[in-house]
Length: 412
Image (cartoon, rainbow, N blue to C red):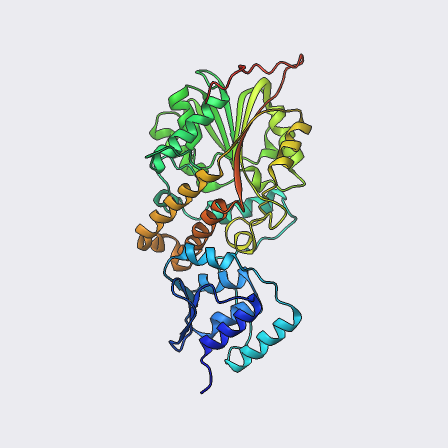
């Protein structure tokens, strides 16, 4: 009796992996092979066509986003098991895959990539292309981000303590940043890449600063202006749609840039660091929070680069420190927050599942599937130390080398 499609696929995968199948596979004919636990469901033959034309992560993502592939059971556990095996197909393996596809009736023209995939044009990290890259992710829908996040609208790692929830973790993160910057009433704060205004609002309300926030997302500017009016802060806080390369002047007491430098690009980072230095007064402090990654997939991998943050670069922490020092900064503190990102992302993922129908109504079924994949994979990447996140506190010394910082960590 000839083997079913599921068992043929399992045999092929196990030969490539050199081990038993990590997850179960069920094919369009209802047959299933593999262990108990998460099950990859191939709803039709096109699901395999995605993998044939784009082997690996990108093909799996396209099949999942399009709805041709699904996962039953714990998606994160499925990721965990699959991530342990990332084989590279040899020419001989690919030839065998094509022959198997022919026997299963899978061969055909390559499917058109889902509309949710970014399609950028222009020179890498030109002003126009960067606006398009940011718009692809951050202009998705203010209503969707309000659904996903807590009331602070902080879209970065929280700072978790025992028994905290997401709102508490984000409040504590924002307050930690303000304490590290030494903010006091009347000081001037610049937030480069201000997002939906979480730090601007927190610093003005709780620490009495005057602030300027810049972002190149049109949707974010609109949202921040509404928030400032709601909190009666528009006389002390200004938000601009402006690229960091367009910033003029100087004289800020403190500068923050929270998970924005990842969008700058490696070649532009020295100029970015120099701009942050120029904008500060002598003895002014910089708080930079950044995600980091090693030499493997600094953009986050094929899925992240196509669907979430095109043109993003997550450099190793040491390289960022080098850029800041070259610009003239003195590094005063580095605070690793990697473990804190895991509950942050999982809180967002739980909210997405709890409000799935609302999310689909706002960004479509395929868009919601992009986010489900993104959040499940992102939490696992931080948990397994494939990505990191750190707060870097630096200072612009004065002409005599004085930092103006206390000798002890008063923010701790």
